[in-house]
Length: 89
Picture (cartoon, rainbow, N blue to C red):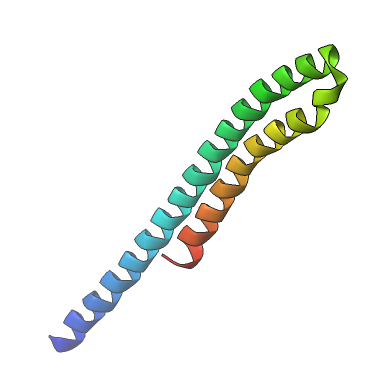
């Protein structure tokens, strides 16, 4: 009887670890996916506005480039959060 209970406990622990791994993977995927979508939208809108501004006034190239690069930071934050979810949590 004790051997059967121990076997069930070990199987339950393995199942729990597998579910935790699945949850981490799904959470990391969602973090990267939504961050990538957000970054794409941000860069698309900022890039279009930056090109329009640069076309009218050449001196705004630096600030316009900075605004576009800030949109890319969203994707990097999503990647960092995904790494934290997988490695630490």
